[in-house]
Amino acid sequence: MSLKGKHLIDPNDFTLEELDEIFDLSEKIIKDKEAYNSICNGKILGALFYEPSTRTRLSFESAMLRMGGRVLGFSDATHSSVAKGESVADTIRVLSSYADIVVMRHPKEGAPRLASQYANVPIINGGDGGHQHPTQTLADLLTIRVLKGSIEGNKIAFCGDLKFGRTVHSLIKTLSRYSGNKFILVSPNELRLPKYLKNMLIKNGNIDIYETEDLESVIEEIDILYMTRIQKERFFNEADYVRLKDSYILTRNKLNNAKSDMIVMHPLPRVNEISYDLDEDERAVYFTQARFGIYTRMALMSLLLGVI
Picture 1 (spheres, rainbow, N blue to C red):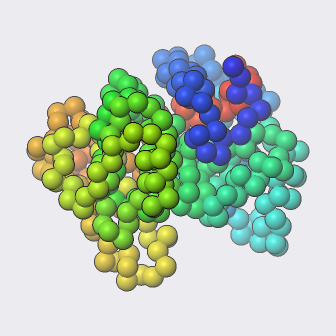
Picture 2 (picture 1 turned 90 degrees about the horizontal axis):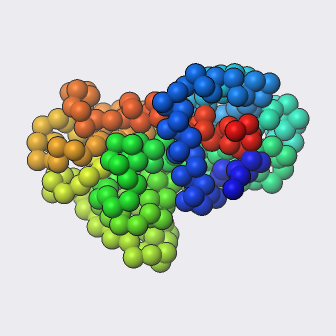
Picture 3 (picture 1 turned 30 degrees about the vertical axis):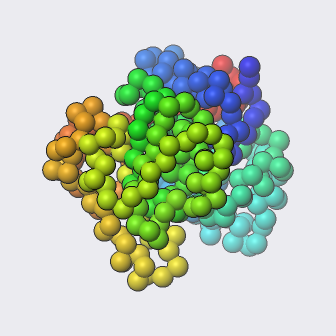
Protein backbone atom coordinates (compact mmCIF):
# COMPACT_ATOMS: atom_id res chain seq x y z
CA MET A 1 0.00 0.00 0.00
CA SER A 2 1.45 3.35 -1.05
CA LEU A 3 0.05 6.88 -1.05
CA LYS A 4 2.90 8.21 -3.20
CA GLY A 5 1.66 10.51 -5.97
CA LYS A 6 -1.98 10.52 -4.84
CA HIS A 7 -4.18 13.60 -4.42
CA LEU A 8 -6.26 14.40 -1.34
CA ILE A 9 -9.36 16.32 -2.40
CA ASP A 10 -12.02 14.57 -0.33
CA PRO A 11 -11.46 12.36 2.75
CA ASN A 12 -13.21 9.56 0.86
CA ASP A 13 -10.30 9.54 -1.59
CA PHE A 14 -8.45 7.37 0.95
CA THR A 15 -9.44 4.02 2.38
CA LEU A 16 -9.68 3.58 6.14
CA GLU A 17 -6.45 1.58 5.97
CA GLU A 18 -4.72 4.50 4.25
CA LEU A 19 -6.08 6.91 6.87
CA ASP A 20 -4.71 4.61 9.58
CA GLU A 21 -1.32 4.73 7.87
CA ILE A 22 -1.37 8.54 8.15
CA PHE A 23 -2.41 8.42 11.81
CA ASP A 24 0.17 5.76 12.68
CA LEU A 25 2.90 7.93 11.17
CA SER A 26 1.51 11.06 12.85
CA GLU A 27 1.81 9.40 16.24
CA LYS A 28 5.38 8.33 15.49
CA ILE A 29 6.22 11.93 14.60
CA ILE A 30 4.66 13.17 17.85
CA LYS A 31 6.88 10.77 19.82
CA ASP A 32 10.13 11.55 17.95
CA LYS A 33 9.93 14.80 15.97
CA GLU A 34 13.67 15.07 15.38
CA ALA A 35 13.73 11.80 13.46
CA TYR A 36 11.78 13.48 10.66
CA ASN A 37 13.48 16.87 10.45
CA SER A 38 15.30 16.25 7.18
CA ILE A 39 13.15 13.77 5.25
CA CYS A 40 11.95 16.48 2.82
CA ASN A 41 15.33 18.05 2.08
CA GLY A 42 15.19 19.39 -1.47
CA LYS A 43 11.37 19.23 -1.63
CA ILE A 44 9.20 22.29 -2.29
CA LEU A 45 5.61 22.87 -1.20
CA GLY A 46 3.53 25.16 -3.41
CA ALA A 47 0.92 26.95 -1.26
CA LEU A 48 -1.92 28.52 -3.24
CA PHE A 49 -4.34 30.31 -0.94
CA TYR A 50 -7.02 32.08 -2.94
CA GLU A 51 -8.85 33.07 0.26
CA PRO A 52 -7.63 34.06 3.74
CA SER A 53 -6.17 31.43 6.05
CA THR A 54 -4.04 31.46 9.16
CA ARG A 55 -3.92 27.99 10.74
CA THR A 56 -4.16 25.90 7.57
CA ARG A 57 -1.58 27.89 5.63
CA LEU A 58 0.89 28.28 8.48
CA SER A 59 0.53 24.69 9.65
CA PHE A 60 1.31 23.44 6.15
CA GLU A 61 4.32 25.75 5.99
CA SER A 62 5.43 24.70 9.47
CA ALA A 63 5.02 21.03 8.55
CA MET A 64 7.18 21.31 5.43
CA LEU A 65 9.83 23.45 7.14
CA ARG A 66 10.01 21.00 10.07
CA MET A 67 10.82 18.25 7.55
CA GLY A 68 13.62 20.26 5.94
CA GLY A 69 11.69 21.35 2.85
CA ARG A 70 10.87 24.78 1.46
CA VAL A 71 7.69 26.70 0.63
CA LEU A 72 6.62 29.03 -2.17
CA GLY A 73 3.28 30.43 -3.19
CA PHE A 74 0.83 33.18 -2.31
CA SER A 75 -1.58 34.00 0.51
CA ASP A 76 -3.41 36.72 -1.42
CA ALA A 77 -4.59 35.93 -4.93
CA THR A 78 -4.81 39.64 -5.80
CA HIS A 79 -1.00 39.70 -5.73
CA SER A 80 -0.70 36.89 -8.26
CA SER A 81 -1.52 36.37 -11.94
CA VAL A 82 -5.00 35.39 -10.83
CA ALA A 83 -5.68 39.13 -10.72
CA LYS A 84 -4.87 39.18 -14.44
CA GLY A 85 -7.44 36.50 -15.13
CA GLU A 86 -5.24 33.40 -15.18
CA SER A 87 -7.22 30.17 -14.82
CA VAL A 88 -6.71 27.58 -12.09
CA ALA A 89 -5.70 25.08 -14.77
CA ASP A 90 -2.91 27.28 -16.11
CA THR A 91 -1.69 28.22 -12.64
CA ILE A 92 -1.41 24.54 -11.69
CA ARG A 93 0.29 23.57 -14.96
CA VAL A 94 3.01 26.12 -14.24
CA LEU A 95 3.33 25.49 -10.51
CA SER A 96 3.71 21.77 -11.14
CA SER A 97 7.07 22.68 -12.66
CA TYR A 98 8.08 24.72 -9.61
CA ALA A 99 6.92 22.56 -6.68
CA ASP A 100 6.86 18.87 -5.72
CA ILE A 101 3.48 19.04 -3.95
CA VAL A 102 0.71 21.67 -3.83
CA VAL A 103 -1.87 22.68 -1.25
CA MET A 104 -4.75 24.83 -2.50
CA ARG A 105 -7.49 26.76 -0.73
CA HIS A 106 -10.15 28.24 -2.95
CA PRO A 107 -13.55 29.90 -2.38
CA LYS A 108 -15.16 27.90 -5.21
CA GLU A 109 -16.25 24.36 -4.50
CA GLY A 110 -14.49 21.86 -6.74
CA ALA A 111 -11.51 24.07 -7.63
CA PRO A 112 -8.93 21.70 -6.04
CA ARG A 113 -10.53 18.76 -7.87
CA LEU A 114 -10.16 20.68 -11.13
CA ALA A 115 -6.55 21.49 -10.27
CA SER A 116 -5.78 17.81 -9.71
CA GLN A 117 -6.82 17.06 -13.31
CA TYR A 118 -4.07 19.34 -14.65
CA ALA A 119 -1.30 18.64 -12.12
CA ASN A 120 1.59 16.22 -12.35
CA VAL A 121 2.32 16.55 -8.62
CA PRO A 122 0.09 15.66 -5.64
CA ILE A 123 -2.66 18.20 -4.92
CA ILE A 124 -4.03 18.68 -1.41
CA ASN A 125 -7.35 20.41 -0.84
CA GLY A 126 -6.82 23.05 1.86
CA GLY A 127 -10.52 23.93 1.84
CA ASP A 128 -12.89 24.68 -1.03
CA GLY A 129 -15.79 27.01 -0.28
CA GLY A 130 -18.32 25.43 2.05
CA HIS A 131 -17.59 21.99 0.63
CA GLN A 132 -14.63 20.03 2.08
CA HIS A 133 -11.61 20.49 4.35
CA PRO A 134 -9.92 17.08 4.38
CA THR A 135 -6.70 17.97 6.19
CA GLN A 136 -8.68 19.50 9.04
CA THR A 137 -10.52 16.19 9.14
CA LEU A 138 -7.19 14.37 9.53
CA ALA A 139 -6.31 16.59 12.49
CA ASP A 140 -9.77 16.03 13.98
CA LEU A 141 -9.60 12.27 13.62
CA LEU A 142 -6.12 12.06 15.12
CA THR A 143 -7.35 14.14 18.07
CA ILE A 144 -10.26 11.75 18.62
CA ARG A 145 -8.06 8.67 18.23
CA VAL A 146 -5.43 9.90 20.70
CA LEU A 147 -7.71 11.49 23.31
CA LYS A 148 -10.72 9.16 23.15
CA GLY A 149 -8.81 5.97 22.38
CA SER A 150 -10.80 5.12 19.26
CA ILE A 151 -12.47 6.77 16.27
CA GLU A 152 -15.31 4.27 16.59
CA GLY A 153 -18.24 4.07 18.99
CA ASN A 154 -18.56 7.73 19.95
CA LYS A 155 -21.56 10.01 20.27
CA ILE A 156 -20.58 13.26 18.59
CA ALA A 157 -22.51 16.53 18.69
CA PHE A 158 -21.83 19.07 15.94
CA CYS A 159 -22.94 22.55 16.99
CA GLY A 160 -23.24 25.84 15.10
CA ASP A 161 -23.03 26.41 11.37
CA LEU A 162 -23.67 23.00 9.87
CA LYS A 163 -24.88 24.37 6.54
CA PHE A 164 -21.74 26.14 5.38
CA GLY A 165 -19.19 24.49 7.68
CA ARG A 166 -16.80 22.58 5.43
CA THR A 167 -14.96 21.18 8.45
CA VAL A 168 -18.22 19.59 9.61
CA HIS A 169 -19.03 18.27 6.13
CA SER A 170 -15.66 16.56 5.79
CA LEU A 171 -15.57 15.18 9.31
CA ILE A 172 -19.10 13.82 9.49
CA LYS A 173 -18.71 12.06 6.12
CA THR A 174 -15.54 10.39 7.31
CA LEU A 175 -16.78 9.51 10.78
CA SER A 176 -19.78 7.80 9.19
CA ARG A 177 -17.36 5.28 7.67
CA TYR A 178 -16.32 4.12 11.15
CA SER A 179 -18.64 1.78 13.03
CA GLY A 180 -20.73 2.67 16.04
CA ASN A 181 -20.67 6.46 15.82
CA LYS A 182 -23.83 8.44 16.54
CA PHE A 183 -24.41 12.05 15.50
CA ILE A 184 -26.33 14.85 17.19
CA LEU A 185 -26.78 17.91 14.95
CA VAL A 186 -27.28 21.14 16.90
CA SER A 187 -28.03 24.26 14.87
CA PRO A 188 -30.58 26.94 14.10
CA ASN A 189 -33.10 25.79 11.52
CA GLU A 190 -31.49 28.04 8.89
CA LEU A 191 -28.06 26.46 9.37
CA ARG A 192 -28.92 22.77 9.39
CA LEU A 193 -26.75 20.18 7.71
CA PRO A 194 -27.52 20.22 3.95
CA LYS A 195 -30.18 17.70 2.99
CA TYR A 196 -28.02 16.08 0.31
CA LEU A 197 -25.35 15.31 2.91
CA LYS A 198 -27.82 14.06 5.50
CA ASN A 199 -29.49 11.83 2.90
CA MET A 200 -26.08 10.52 1.80
CA LEU A 201 -25.22 9.55 5.37
CA ILE A 202 -28.51 7.75 5.84
CA LYS A 203 -28.27 6.00 2.47
CA ASN A 204 -24.72 4.79 3.00
CA GLY A 205 -25.35 2.97 6.26
CA ASN A 206 -27.26 2.53 9.46
CA ILE A 207 -26.37 5.98 10.80
CA ASP A 208 -28.02 7.27 13.98
CA ILE A 209 -28.74 11.00 13.50
CA TYR A 210 -30.67 13.28 15.87
CA GLU A 211 -31.34 16.98 15.16
CA THR A 212 -32.09 19.66 17.75
CA GLU A 213 -31.70 23.40 18.33
CA ASP A 214 -31.04 22.94 22.06
CA LEU A 215 -27.46 22.01 23.00
CA GLU A 216 -28.07 21.90 26.73
CA SER A 217 -30.75 19.24 26.31
CA VAL A 218 -28.16 16.75 24.99
CA ILE A 219 -24.99 17.85 26.78
CA GLU A 220 -25.13 14.99 29.31
CA GLU A 221 -24.96 12.19 26.74
CA ILE A 222 -22.25 13.23 24.30
CA ASP A 223 -18.63 12.07 24.13
CA ILE A 224 -17.36 14.73 21.73
CA LEU A 225 -18.68 18.26 21.22
CA TYR A 226 -17.54 19.80 17.94
CA MET A 227 -18.22 23.54 18.05
CA THR A 228 -18.13 25.74 14.95
CA ARG A 229 -18.41 29.46 14.40
CA ILE A 230 -21.21 31.12 12.48
CA GLN A 231 -19.30 32.10 9.34
CA LYS A 232 -19.94 35.71 8.40
CA GLU A 233 -18.18 35.30 5.05
CA ARG A 234 -20.70 32.67 3.89
CA PHE A 235 -23.78 34.85 4.40
CA PHE A 236 -25.36 36.83 1.59
CA ASN A 237 -26.67 39.57 3.87
CA GLU A 238 -25.53 41.13 7.13
CA ALA A 239 -28.95 40.96 8.82
CA ASP A 240 -29.09 37.14 8.75
CA TYR A 241 -25.59 36.89 10.18
CA VAL A 242 -26.31 39.33 13.01
CA ARG A 243 -29.50 37.46 13.88
CA LEU A 244 -27.77 34.06 14.08
CA LYS A 245 -24.19 34.79 15.16
CA ASP A 246 -24.82 34.36 18.90
CA SER A 247 -27.03 31.28 18.61
CA TYR A 248 -24.63 29.21 20.73
CA ILE A 249 -22.10 30.47 23.25
CA LEU A 250 -20.42 27.68 25.20
CA THR A 251 -19.29 28.60 28.71
CA ARG A 252 -17.66 26.50 31.41
CA ASN A 253 -20.86 26.50 33.46
CA LYS A 254 -22.75 24.87 30.59
CA LEU A 255 -20.50 21.82 30.94
CA ASN A 256 -21.54 21.19 34.54
CA ASN A 257 -23.72 18.28 33.46
CA ALA A 258 -21.37 16.99 30.76
CA LYS A 259 -19.27 13.83 31.07
CA SER A 260 -15.94 14.31 32.83
CA ASP A 261 -14.12 12.75 29.86
CA MET A 262 -16.04 14.55 27.14
CA ILE A 263 -13.83 16.62 24.84
CA VAL A 264 -14.67 19.97 23.26
CA MET A 265 -13.23 20.45 19.78
CA HIS A 266 -13.23 23.45 17.44
CA PRO A 267 -11.45 23.89 14.08
CA LEU A 268 -10.70 27.56 14.91
CA PRO A 269 -10.79 30.47 14.56
CA ARG A 270 -13.38 31.07 17.22
CA VAL A 271 -15.27 34.35 17.47
CA ASN A 272 -17.57 34.24 20.49
CA GLU A 273 -19.05 30.73 20.37
CA ILE A 274 -16.63 29.46 23.05
CA SER A 275 -16.08 31.58 26.12
CA TYR A 276 -12.46 32.11 27.17
CA ASP A 277 -13.24 30.74 30.63
CA LEU A 278 -13.54 27.29 29.03
CA ASP A 279 -9.88 27.30 27.98
CA GLU A 280 -8.82 26.22 31.48
CA ASP A 281 -11.13 23.20 31.46
CA GLU A 282 -9.22 19.99 30.68
CA ARG A 283 -12.03 18.98 28.33
CA ALA A 284 -11.19 21.89 26.00
CA VAL A 285 -8.80 20.36 23.45
CA TYR A 286 -9.00 22.75 20.49
CA PHE A 287 -5.44 23.98 20.85
CA THR A 288 -4.18 20.40 21.05
CA GLN A 289 -6.28 19.75 17.94
CA ALA A 290 -4.54 22.64 16.14
CA ARG A 291 -1.12 21.28 17.13
CA PHE A 292 -2.01 17.82 15.88
CA GLY A 293 -2.78 19.44 12.51
CA ILE A 294 0.95 20.01 12.00
CA TYR A 295 1.78 16.35 12.58
CA THR A 296 -0.97 14.99 10.33
CA ARG A 297 0.15 17.34 7.56
CA MET A 298 3.75 16.23 8.03
CA ALA A 299 2.65 12.62 7.78
CA LEU A 300 0.39 13.27 4.78
CA MET A 301 2.96 15.18 2.73
CA SER A 302 5.78 12.74 3.45
CA LEU A 303 3.59 9.83 2.32
CA LEU A 304 2.31 11.59 -0.81
CA LEU A 305 5.89 12.50 -1.71
CA GLY A 306 7.07 8.96 -1.04
CA VAL A 307 9.96 10.03 1.19
CA ILE A 308 8.98 7.42 3.80
